[in-house]
Length: 57
Image 1 (cartoon, rainbow, N blue to C red):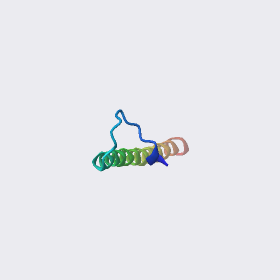
Image 2: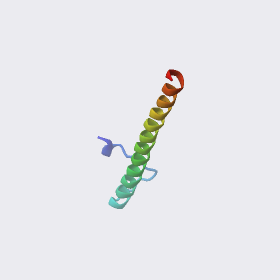
Image 3: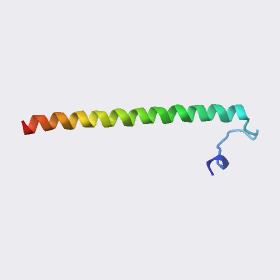
Image 4: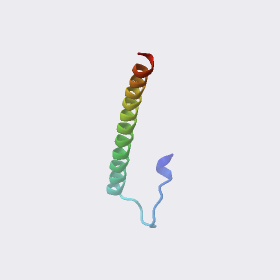
């Protein structure tokens, strides 16, 4: 379904090279998002552990 909704600023058809470049950008963004989520979870675990030791002990 997403393949049917491609925004372009030209009436020319999209080439396979352009599609490959778009997919590379999408993959890079997705990898960056996963890294952000991973480090966010790690930071939250560390913060919760520090707060636990500060208030419990």
